[in-house]
Image (cartoon, rainbow, N blue to C red; front, side):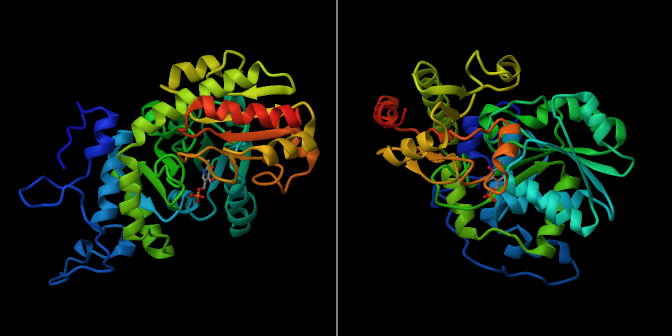
Length: 389
Ligand code: PLP
């Protein structure tokens, strides 16, 4: 449809962008086009063929238009998972023997994709400290085609400045790809900070209800067409029903983020005042190392809060076991509050020493703060902390 991308705000785009023009008798909510293929194909124009693996099913197209409007990019593409979006973007951007310079602070599976998978297939990878221009410059090589980072990072919620690698990418003829899953396009528009491609695990805030697996990538028409080509060949295309569910989730993205932002701030400030809590990580707190940068480049600090319990691993195990409202589960960004310990999940393959070196000591608990009443959440955290702290 018809949202005016220049004047409409993100909440409006999240509801309306990509929807068909309203005509009398048409359904207000677009149906699921649960079809693998579409009539057509006469003549020579293979480019016009509609086939759900190609990402041009109407449900997939609606998501693509909505995401492009939300990110302020020319185009976007929905894929079958966040990992699918990341992998296909790397393959699209890397020529044979190409090299990626990546931030050291990455989601575990993305790091495994780079270090174990792409490296074994002849791509070069080096890791950098993302807040240092010198480190990025040391990390790039003549064959570097992709600079890659996450903002904010998992699970320490560091906020690094995408403008530093964006400038270097311009200088060397590479692209900057940013995974902004933890921010959502409501809290940060990374393309406006110089990212050439923005990736989200749509499984998290975009879907928002922990009931789908999907990914999206936004960028220029040219880049998105190359990613689409990879999706066509490798096949991680989303099912139409998942696209429909994602559209349903996106309609409430702006209002959900408002509550996630508010609840997380309340919960983080509360934890900071509790005995037995050694550290609280939340970019909205004045004690966070990146608070001033986060205040500059984010319009909300997000729904993720991490804490370190003084009692270490046993205290964290007890604390998470005693929670009654918040549940222990991996993943994040849904309406319900979930907690996890990186030493059992994303960072399980690292030694204790390696985790500590990354700022994740035993006792570290990551909290995806949901949209429940914050007073109920705090009561739940308080009773568990009383036992564990
Ligand atoms: N990027 C980040 C920052 C994540 O946290 C995750 C999943 O937790 C992914 C990417 C992968 O997303 P998916 O599980 O949708 O493949």
